Amino acid sequence: MFEGEFKYLSAYEEGLAGLGLPSFFVYCREGDTRRLLPEIRDAIKSVRPEKIFFFGDSDTATNLQFSASALFLTQTVRPLEVYLPRLSIAGPKGFDELKSQHNSAFASELDRLISSAYRVDPDISYLLLHRDLIAIAQDDFKLLVPALASKHKERLLKLCAQARLQK
Image (cartoon, rainbow, N blue to C red; front, top):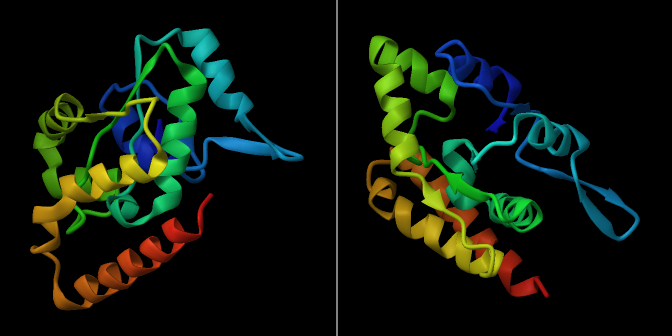
Protein backbone atom coordinates (compact mmCIF):
# COMPACT_ATOMS: atom_id res chain seq x y z
CA MET A 1 0.00 0.00 0.00
CA PHE A 2 1.25 3.43 -0.91
CA GLU A 3 0.48 6.91 0.34
CA GLY A 4 -0.46 8.47 -2.99
CA GLU A 5 -1.99 6.92 -6.08
CA PHE A 6 0.60 8.42 -8.45
CA LYS A 7 3.43 7.37 -6.16
CA TYR A 8 2.10 3.83 -6.33
CA LEU A 9 2.25 3.95 -10.13
CA SER A 10 6.05 4.19 -9.85
CA ALA A 11 6.10 0.81 -8.12
CA TYR A 12 3.37 -0.67 -10.33
CA GLU A 13 5.48 0.10 -13.40
CA GLU A 14 8.17 -2.10 -11.83
CA GLY A 15 5.72 -4.98 -11.41
CA LEU A 16 4.85 -4.47 -7.75
CA ALA A 17 1.19 -5.25 -7.07
CA GLY A 18 -0.46 -3.01 -4.54
CA LEU A 19 -2.90 -0.28 -3.69
CA GLY A 20 -2.48 3.48 -3.98
CA LEU A 21 -4.25 5.51 -1.30
CA PRO A 22 -5.13 9.22 -1.50
CA SER A 23 -3.38 9.76 1.86
CA PHE A 24 -1.92 7.63 4.62
CA PHE A 25 -5.25 7.31 6.42
CA VAL A 26 -6.38 3.68 6.23
CA TYR A 27 -9.71 4.10 7.97
CA CYS A 28 -12.99 5.96 7.78
CA ARG A 29 -15.16 6.97 10.69
CA GLU A 30 -18.69 5.79 11.33
CA GLY A 31 -19.71 7.84 14.33
CA ASP A 32 -17.11 7.18 17.01
CA THR A 33 -15.92 3.98 15.34
CA ARG A 34 -12.98 3.72 12.96
CA ARG A 35 -13.31 1.14 10.18
CA LEU A 36 -10.72 -0.08 7.73
CA LEU A 37 -11.28 1.48 4.30
CA PRO A 38 -13.43 -0.93 2.28
CA GLU A 39 -10.92 -0.84 -0.61
CA ILE A 40 -8.19 -2.14 1.70
CA ARG A 41 -10.46 -4.78 3.20
CA ASP A 42 -11.54 -5.94 -0.27
CA ALA A 43 -7.96 -6.00 -1.60
CA ILE A 44 -6.82 -8.14 1.35
CA LYS A 45 -9.75 -10.49 0.87
CA SER A 46 -9.06 -10.79 -2.87
CA VAL A 47 -5.24 -11.02 -2.86
CA ARG A 48 -4.69 -12.75 0.50
CA PRO A 49 -1.20 -11.33 1.05
CA GLU A 50 1.25 -12.93 3.46
CA LYS A 51 2.24 -9.49 4.78
CA ILE A 52 1.55 -5.84 4.04
CA PHE A 53 4.10 -3.15 3.23
CA PHE A 54 2.74 0.33 3.93
CA PHE A 55 4.82 2.92 2.05
CA GLY A 56 4.55 6.46 3.41
CA ASP A 57 6.30 9.60 2.26
CA SER A 58 9.62 10.69 3.74
CA ASP A 59 7.95 13.23 6.04
CA THR A 60 5.97 10.57 7.94
CA ALA A 61 8.82 10.47 10.47
CA THR A 62 7.49 13.78 11.79
CA ASN A 63 3.77 13.05 11.45
CA LEU A 64 2.19 11.38 14.47
CA GLN A 65 -1.01 10.65 12.56
CA PHE A 66 0.91 8.33 10.25
CA SER A 67 1.87 6.15 13.21
CA ALA A 68 -1.70 6.13 14.48
CA SER A 69 -2.90 5.04 11.05
CA ALA A 70 -0.17 2.39 10.64
CA LEU A 71 -0.93 0.94 14.06
CA PHE A 72 -4.66 0.87 13.34
CA LEU A 73 -3.94 -1.02 10.12
CA THR A 74 -1.67 -3.46 11.95
CA GLN A 75 -4.19 -4.15 14.69
CA THR A 76 -7.07 -4.48 12.23
CA VAL A 77 -5.44 -6.91 9.80
CA ARG A 78 -3.71 -9.17 12.32
CA PRO A 79 -2.51 -11.88 12.10
CA LEU A 80 -1.06 -10.34 8.91
CA GLU A 81 2.13 -8.45 9.66
CA VAL A 82 2.54 -4.83 8.55
CA TYR A 83 5.93 -3.41 7.57
CA LEU A 84 6.88 0.23 7.02
CA PRO A 85 9.59 0.80 4.40
CA ARG A 86 11.32 4.05 5.35
CA LEU A 87 12.41 6.79 2.98
CA SER A 88 15.06 9.17 4.24
CA ILE A 89 13.57 12.31 5.75
CA ALA A 90 16.19 14.19 3.73
CA GLY A 91 14.48 13.04 0.54
CA PRO A 92 13.26 12.05 -1.89
CA LYS A 93 9.74 12.85 -0.64
CA GLY A 94 7.91 9.94 -2.26
CA PHE A 95 8.38 6.88 -4.37
CA ASP A 96 7.79 8.72 -7.62
CA GLU A 97 10.75 10.99 -6.82
CA LEU A 98 12.77 7.99 -5.67
CA LYS A 99 12.18 6.38 -9.04
CA SER A 100 13.22 9.47 -10.97
CA GLN A 101 16.43 9.75 -8.89
CA HIS A 102 17.39 6.08 -9.23
CA ASN A 103 16.15 5.39 -12.78
CA SER A 104 17.52 1.96 -13.73
CA ALA A 105 18.45 1.14 -10.12
CA PHE A 106 14.92 1.79 -8.81
CA ALA A 107 14.01 -1.90 -8.58
CA SER A 108 17.06 -2.67 -6.44
CA GLU A 109 16.38 0.39 -4.28
CA LEU A 110 12.80 -0.78 -3.81
CA ASP A 111 14.10 -4.24 -2.83
CA ARG A 112 16.45 -2.62 -0.30
CA LEU A 113 13.61 -0.63 1.27
CA ILE A 114 11.40 -3.70 1.48
CA SER A 115 14.11 -5.89 3.01
CA SER A 116 14.91 -3.27 5.67
CA ALA A 117 11.30 -2.29 6.43
CA TYR A 118 10.24 -1.78 10.04
CA ARG A 119 7.78 -4.41 11.34
CA VAL A 120 4.95 -2.82 13.31
CA ASP A 121 4.26 -4.49 16.65
CA PRO A 122 0.46 -4.55 17.06
CA ASP A 123 0.77 -4.52 20.84
CA ILE A 124 2.56 -1.18 21.29
CA SER A 125 1.07 2.28 21.37
CA TYR A 126 1.24 4.54 18.35
CA LEU A 127 3.39 6.89 20.45
CA LEU A 128 6.02 4.17 20.92
CA LEU A 129 5.75 3.27 17.25
CA HIS A 130 6.43 6.87 16.36
CA ARG A 131 9.36 7.03 18.75
CA ASP A 132 10.83 4.12 16.78
CA LEU A 133 10.25 5.86 13.44
CA ILE A 134 12.00 8.99 14.71
CA ALA A 135 14.90 6.86 15.94
CA ILE A 136 15.18 5.22 12.51
CA ALA A 137 15.29 8.68 10.88
CA GLN A 138 17.70 10.18 13.44
CA ASP A 139 20.83 10.09 11.29
CA ASP A 140 18.95 11.44 8.27
CA PHE A 141 17.95 14.59 10.17
CA LYS A 142 21.61 15.64 9.92
CA LEU A 143 21.36 15.50 6.10
CA LEU A 144 18.55 18.07 5.87
CA VAL A 145 19.23 21.44 4.30
CA PRO A 146 18.71 24.25 6.86
CA ALA A 147 15.25 25.28 5.64
CA LEU A 148 13.95 21.70 5.82
CA ALA A 149 15.72 21.11 9.13
CA SER A 150 13.83 24.06 10.65
CA LYS A 151 10.55 22.81 9.21
CA HIS A 152 11.03 19.32 10.65
CA LYS A 153 12.22 20.64 14.03
CA GLU A 154 8.99 22.63 14.23
CA ARG A 155 7.01 19.54 13.22
CA LEU A 156 8.76 17.54 15.95
CA LEU A 157 7.83 20.15 18.54
CA LYS A 158 4.21 20.07 17.37
CA LEU A 159 4.34 16.29 17.43
CA CYS A 160 5.43 16.40 21.07
CA ALA A 161 2.56 18.73 21.88
CA GLN A 162 0.10 16.48 20.05
CA ALA A 163 1.39 13.43 21.88
CA ARG A 164 0.99 15.21 25.21
CA LEU A 165 -2.65 15.96 24.43
CA GLN A 166 -3.51 12.40 23.37
CA LYS A 167 -5.42 10.09 25.68
